[in-house]
Amino acid sequence: MLKNIILMGPPGAGKGTQAKRLVTKFDLIHISTGDMFREAIKENTPLGALASSYINKGDLVPDDVTIGIVKERLAKEDCKNGFLLDGFPRTIAQAEALSKIGLEINRPIDVVINIDCDKNELIRRISGRRVCKNCGAPYHVDTMKPKTEGVCDICGGPLYQRKDDNKEALEVRLQHYVNETRPLLEYYEKQGLLKNFDGSQGSDKLFDELSLLILNK
Ligand code: AP5
Ligand code: MG
Image 1 (cartoon, helix red, strand yellow):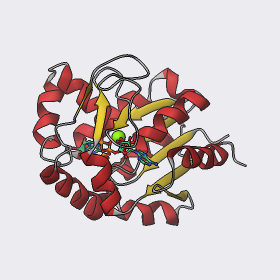
Image 2: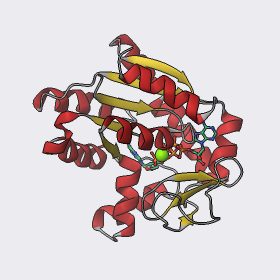
Image 3: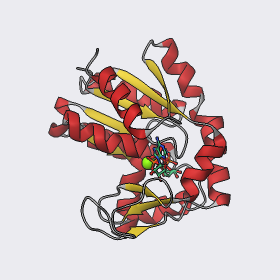
């Protein structure tokens, strides 16, 4: 089984949706830098104050801050049986730092999963997304509705719309993806780690394809 995994893709491609199911099925630690920043914002920590000034506009949080929190998280004992990085790395500097960390703690990356999706569909998904305030589970007002409106199926928490899920911030996020993150695909392709998947297909079908990859079948 592949156990040290990077999940990449533009905003709205379905990283969080797939990550939540995969970590449950394969007992992996889910490391989402976006979720970690949102948690810090909710808790009003100094990290949260710094992160919100970038996230709300759709900008990337500076590399040194982001690398620092991932390094600390990956070194924890519970990551030894496998982890899934969701939304990290997003720049070449982050990717280089990650390979250095992987060597230091002997947890090298086994595979990089890229979920791609066209821009119109990304806009549709992001503008209709609702997220659980407690557990972060993603929903969609038209295509992934919860059983009870405004309530999370998994934990019963209230659903809300992320502050960066608006037209202006999304344009900025997409630009950062194109300029800073997409070049990582070539970086990992050269290392023979990249596997591409169609994110516009149904969520269940994509989940089955990713599960087969992780099982190394
Ligand atoms: P982050 O939280 O990582 O956001 P993102 O990359 O913009 O991606 P999203 O979470 O918006 O989309 P997703 O791919 O997870 O899609 P989801 O599954 O929810 O980062 C937020 C911010 O934090 C960044 O902008 C930056 O400021 C900062 N940050 C984070 N990491 C950083 C880093 N490494 N460096 C610097 N800054 C960093 O699905 C979206 C919607 O589509 C949902 O409504 C869902 O229900 C629906 N959906 C999902 N799959 C399907 C499907 N197959 N078919 C139909 N609908 C679907
Ligand atoms: Mg996400």
